[in-house]
Length: 384
Ligand SMILES: *[C@@H]1O[C@H](CO)[C@@H](O)[C@H](O)[C@H]1NC(C)=O
Ligand SMILES: *[C@@H]1O[C@H](CO)[C@@H](O)[C@H](O)[C@H]1NC(C)=O
Ligand SMILES: *[C@@H]1O[C@H](CO)[C@@H](O)[C@H](O)[C@H]1NC(C)=O
Ligand SMILES: *[C@@H]1O[C@H](CO)[C@@H](O)[C@H](O)[C@H]1NC(C)=O
Ligand SMILES: *[C@@H]1O[C@H](CO)[C@@H](O)[C@H](O)[C@H]1NC(C)=O
Ligand SMILES: *[C@@H]1O[C@H](CO)[C@@H](O)[C@H](O)[C@H]1NC(C)=O
Ligand SMILES: *[C@@H]1O[C@H](CO)[C@@H](O)[C@H](O)[C@H]1NC(C)=O
Ligand SMILES: *[C@@H]1O[C@H](CO)[C@@H](O)[C@H](O)[C@H]1NC(C)=O
Ligand SMILES: *[C@@H]1O[C@H](CO)[C@@H](O)[C@H](O)[C@H]1NC(C)=O
Image 1 (cartoon, protein in one colour):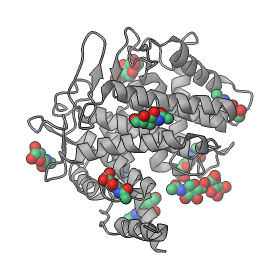
Image 2: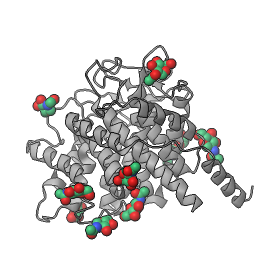
Image 3: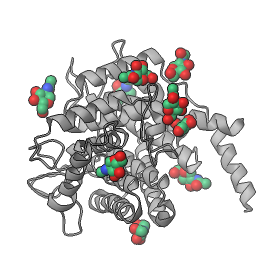
Image 4: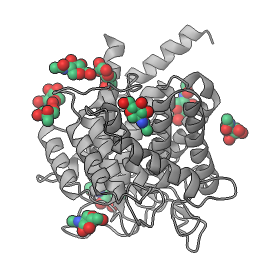
């Protein structure tokens, strides 16, 4: 097929599906407030920092072609103040003798989720003699590469007391390693972008089942072989951040095959997940087990990944699933800004108890909105 016909066909396919209306600003402001009130665990703070970046400071996120390098100075309107506040607090509270950004966590991976915010704080700091952010980020990287337990193939463990692979790892670690590399440039960038890719590849090798969904936890002294919704969402969303980091780095042209693989691996999770979507738009906590409960957290994050991938791949095939999911999420946010019907992020297999909420679920709503908004702007740019 001549390339111009293919291009036209792709554009038609893109414009075709109706874009769902987005969430309203008052709702989003409440969702954000509740997120800031409740995010406290390391991975919740890291996920919150990423969500706030995409939601309020999109020019600084890895989804923007201008991501590398970020501006050396932020100004009064583009200040990333909420993101930098998380980095500041975490670095200030880190004991001097801890290489990870949080001391004594059972997880070897979760503390690194705040690393991108710490690197941004370093890059944009006004006091150039302040080395604290750079030192903290470097310590976290050294811990991951040199001290955390690893499999024989080189997958860094999600846990620090034994070698164990969790799908969650893919959102916590590879995006940090990739961002670190893209900021360094040169040979360090090549090595670290490759390392981030390799961790995604090794985790997929360790967790993927036939059919494309990933198990939640493998190796070590206990496992969770179910296709946990949030686990699959962490994996897809983490690979997506690595893909966009590589795409927008100066080294992008050296990683053609890796980028194609990441694209395929993300799509594989999306296609398998949406094939189990319920008529009202939800996914189930165990994606392929409708006898488990409906879970809005994984539904929101997988919908976010779907809008981003539609834009990156110029392929809108899965957008109708995301539109349905967005409608369900909209209907699941109460007047105080809490996302209802989430999985309890600490048990993995029970719904949040009445009166309890999911900080990560709150962040996923902002990630979904940011992805939807970017996709909508992209469609509008095609027709203008
Ligand atoms: C919502 O907020 C965005 C960004 O701040 C703004 O562009 C948009 O006009 C707002 N929408 C409404 C309906 O106020
Ligand atoms: C937040 O985390 C810190 C450190 O892990 C802990 O000491 C504190 O109790 C937590 N606060 C809440 C409200 O959970
Ligand atoms: C990317 O950042 C530039 C400014 O650096 C801005 O003009 C543009 O709107 C941003 N795009 C997105 C999708 O945020
Ligand atoms: C702040 O920085 C952003 C992007 O870096 C730029 O678009 C904007 O014009 C700046 N605003 C002011 C008031 O300088
Ligand atoms: C940061 O920017 C936001 C929105 O542009 C603004 O409301 C806030 O006052 C700024 N904060 C600082 C410390 O400049
Ligand atoms: C910290 O920022 C400086 C620019 O001010 C940069 O040269 C350095 O590489 C950064 N450190 C890290 C670890 O990113
Ligand atoms: C890309 O994926 C294919 C199939 O899984 C694999 O054979 C190949 O080695 C991968 N390429 C790289 C650069 O990892
Ligand atoms: C959506 O459908 C599922 C399965 O049919 C059901 O369990 C769930 O409660 C529904 N969610 C809402 C918000 O109605
Ligand atoms: C678009 O994406 C769908 C779902 O991933 C895939 O089956 C299809 O082959 C893709 N189309 C093109 C033209 O790449």
